[in-house]
Image 1 (cartoon, rainbow, N blue to C red):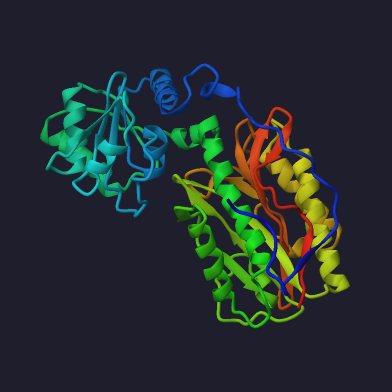
Image 2 (cartoon, rainbow, N blue to C red; image 1 turned 90 degrees about the vertical axis):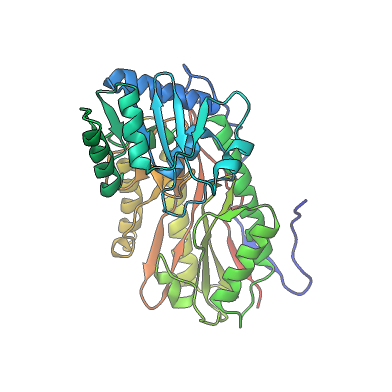
Length: 410
């Protein structure tokens, strides 16, 4: 059981803020093709894909992306996201076939739920040849593929079809599975809630750990070790720890810079749990903040909270992004905020929808970050990030850590 509190002699206190109030448990989402008319979990995901196939006139689809495969199969703790792309799925109206190799086959069979429709294969030929063989055996005339499928894999399917004298169209799916993944079901949401609980606990731990004289790398190492020791099975991404003027670099790489009294320290990090990820950023200050630091933090916080209040189902992500730009721009810092406001999170750390210049419609069940920031070169920066789910009533953060500016006593 994780508990709060700080070691004796190393205290943190918060500059007070309003209470955001209790969070509502999110149970259901009902937007679009994706949820209410289908079963929950992996079975429902296959149903959704097959409904799309019928609508588009696809006889089959081929899936290679590991995040898409994890989502479709529901198999936990087997995919290792090495970018070797060692697997492929072939889905028809009545088959779910999965090709893998000897490194993974036993793990898939051991971790696949009873009653799963997936049939595993370890054919000794090439995977593109295996796909071509399945197309031929099923007399497919239209077999859709992912937009980002490797060219050599795509060409391998074509060669395999030519070798078999088989004609089959291979259209792109236009990101359809990624778009489906943007709307999370109850199982996914609970995994991400748990990942965030580890992330919140890590922040409380770090408030009692960080001291002047430590390096950014030391802080990064402690942060990540704590998450692994307290339930994370992976990192959501490479943790960002920046201090002093380095906080003006939104994607700063932790360095040997020594943290000093008076510094902002920014931590952007997250835990991975059962292949799902969390994402959170907090900026703390070492010792009493200056008025400039207080004002900068208050501005970023106001942008965050006003944008959160404006989120509702059906809004365009671009409109919320423009609101954040206006708030920060009206305060005179528009030139120092040049990244998107937020993004979807799930199996991948960056998923749909986006809060940037694109016109994504934000739907119930979208799990998104909210992370405005201001970065002053040579001085420092502030970013404040939560993530949570869009409900019928607005935005419910999974993040439980308050928005107060924490002051580390030095």
